[in-house]
Image (tube, rainbow, N blue to C red; front, side, top):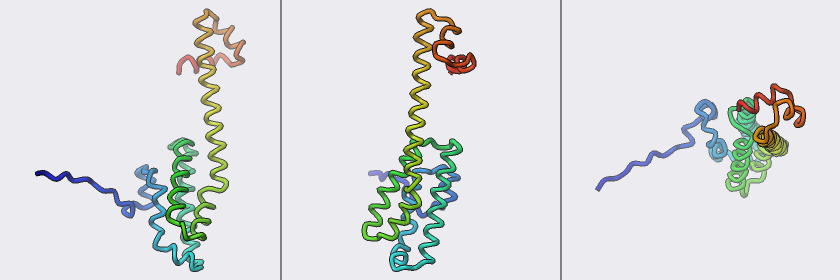
Length: 166
């Protein structure tokens, strides 16, 4: 009888730098586990532990936001990481109001509103692009010329060419 060995991923083995260097973004929500041993001290009112937690946790979400802004991850992925993080925070901090409130301030707050706006804008742009592509293809198949299509849709000839070539 043979025994299969299954590799196990240990989150504590990954620093914040390693998560971002290795692009292991799916670990970001679970990074909160690294602070769990400090939660009681934070709840007891230790300002040093609270400040340290806030600084390190803020760094994670700022770096995640930088990845989104640079295009290394899209708004949907960023939003999913934030949503999963919320679930982890809720589970880990069920009886730790101070930690939960501070984590949510860092991770959610305006970030969640911004993410929703980004998702809507990304979807809107995608819809417009697909609509133009479909309209151009339909008009071309109905024998319309490039000039007629450009005039009808209200786009430049360069945009027409980009859509056709994409």
